[in-house]
Image 1: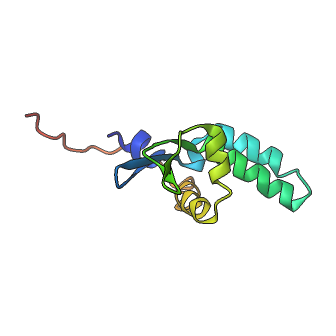
Image 2: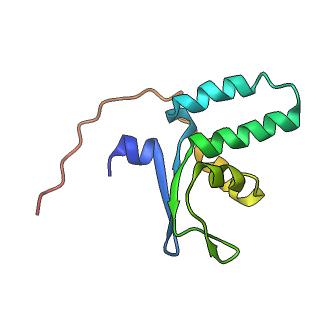
Image 3: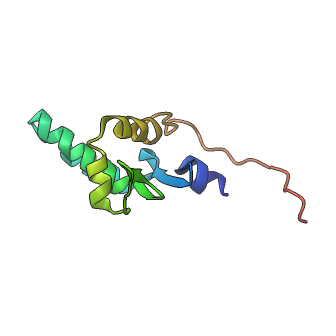
Length: 118
């Protein structure tokens, strides 16, 4: 597990035999480019719809073992966008990908002790 790619840029959540992998908003160039464009949309409902699509396509990396109403859900960008319409799922995703934005933090180089090899 790499500090930058696995923790600071992506987060994987395990749930009862299932997994959801998300990318942080500040680690996705596609997210920023597309949100700038979506910001130009004047109709608020259309802008909200565009933002859900952007998050589903750019920041939901994948899942396995996910079920909806007892049925397995295949990972696809199309399904990710559809799931962003579900309020509780959307809140969960947003709390991870937008919450705790450390983009203003200065990156430092640390000297850490290596784990012993077995």
